[in-house]
Amino acid sequence: MARMPASVDHPVTVLPFARSQGVTLIEMVVAMAVVAILTALAVPSFQALSKRSRVDSTLHLLTSHFASARIAAITHNVPVVICPSRGDGACRQDSDWSDHWLSFRDPDGNRQPDEAIDLYRNDPAPRSPRLRILSTGGRRQLRYLPTGYSSGSNLTLRVCYDGKVSGLVVVNNAGRVRTARPSDSKPCGDAPDSL
Image (cartoon, rainbow, N blue to C red; front, side):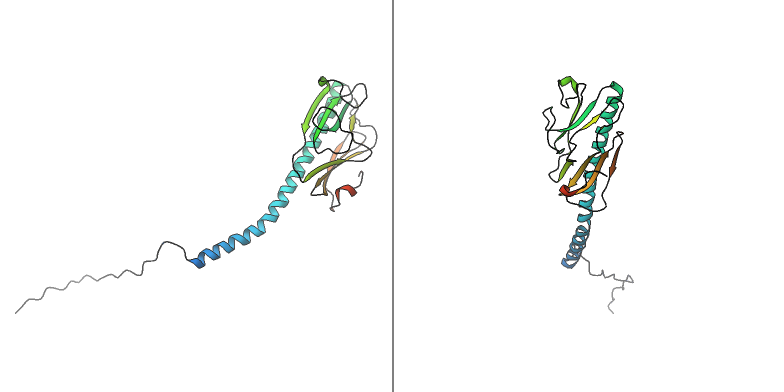
């Protein structure tokens, strides 16, 4: 008799169909759709955040510039003028503060710096083609007396973004500076002169 080989009692394991490591076209389309929806939701929020950040930064820069000039007037016992400038060391004659801000000592009251030593600060305004800063029509400059008071009428600077008033800086006769955010978006040219 011929001998049969002994059977092996080891079970044969069959591997299930091995899946590839890539993604299917449907999975890729679903993922891209989710990303597109999230982006569409996030972009307007980011634009609003960016706008608010630029306006807030401008408001803070203006108030700190005014506070610095007021402190200089009190400390040095001399009138100090803050005005819009083109960066050339002289005050502009219009009400557009969108280029530079200039502060200087003004003992003779001519509202222009007489010498380079009179200048305290000549700072550029924040750069953005969508941002404009305009003052009240009747008051283009701010003058702090040695007492820290700002004589004359209130000065209101309108910070406009995309042609609409987004923030206000108001300086009263006592020299106090405050900021405000209008509740409604008025066009930049139709804003009230003071609050």
